[in-house]
Each structure stands twice: as C-alpha cells, then as structure tokens.
Image (tube, rainbow, N blue to C red; front, side, top):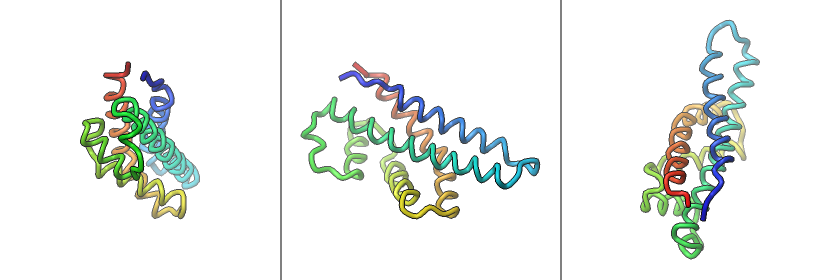
Length: 139
C-alpha cells in the first residue's frame, strides 16, 4: 500500500520552520508578545507533527503487518511494535511525545509549553526519520 506522505512532510517542515523562527527571536529586540506567540506556534506544530507521525506510523504498520497486528493495541504498544519492526528507533521518545501531546490538550500552561519546546527538536528528528523509513520502502 503506497502512502501519500505530503501531509507528514508538510507538518514536519512547518515544525522545523517554527523552531527556526523561535531561535531567531531570542534577542531583546523582540517583544515578549512576539516570543510568546512564536512559542505557541511551536507547540501547535508539535501537536500536529506528533498526530501526523503516529497516524502515518499506524498506516505503515497496517500496510506491512496487516490490521490484525494492531488489533487492541494501545498507543504505547503501537510504538513498541514500530520499534520492534525497525520503523522507529526511539520508542521511549515517542511515548514521551504522546504524554506531552496529552498534557497540552488537557492542561495548557507555560510550564507545559516549555516541556514541549524542549522536546520539539527531538520530535522533529523522530518524524524526519519516520518519513525516511516510510519513503524508502513506500510501494
């Protein structure tokens, strides 16, 4: 089953752009409002990239291993299955991204946002690797 990776690629590119924007606005010449707005954009892009990542992971596993392989699996078990099959190389990282995504959904605060900001470069790397794995054998 061939997957159209456009949405995953766009989400990852957008997260990368948001992180670059955040990195470029760290001087005193930028107002607090601008920095906070860009931080909020990084958090939003984190959420979208995570969602795209795990959904494409699920589609890829379904195509490679069949729907029975996913029957009754929790998200954490999905990540473990993906790791066991070489689709991802950092299962614990994906579990952390899942936890952070749930936190931003249910309790949005700047403390939580800072955790997401810290993890965003790791998610960017993980999603890029996932994209490469899928694209390499996408038939």
